Length: 256
Image (cartoon, rainbow, N blue to C red):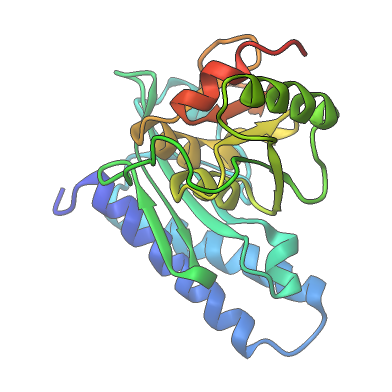
């Protein structure tokens, strides 16, 4: 292997993101056609690069037919060529490319990268950012802009009460963002301290960004406290939360 898995993940995410930016800048036509072209072209490029650099590895992707051989493979790349397809078509910034490597020996994601092309932000597991201990601005919860958690009002109310009791903040403010990668990036940059998703994510949505969050010291768990598992036959994930360490202490005190 001429390139480490971590460097390869970063290179693939970056190249796919650059392709997507150019495609959007040059595209003339219906926005749905742009979204379809983005998904397809990014998938083709990523598959080509993985075939070139890691020809014996398997792939699980949102944009490809599931290969059942991955369930017995030792190395599986879990990718989302364009996470936030809707936002991409709208000309927004909050979409990303996700590239993650699951390895059987660890039963976990070992190397991962996410690239937010519109803001030129690259995050990787081998060089995770330092997370501020506590924000200087009011703390925020980041949620889906199209499908916020059903418990959002309950979460905001209970967390705000605990924040006030501990003299940390008057309330928990709301931040609405598109892709899972972009929402995770909000925690990685200190723009938010809590990310809650009450179901509907698939492995390719979560694998890369959540692995980077863990590498940065962010707490990543299911609502029941269990760790996330990947490369399963059922790729759907139950409700999850990501939180900076201090926010995790507070979130784990509330009742849902």
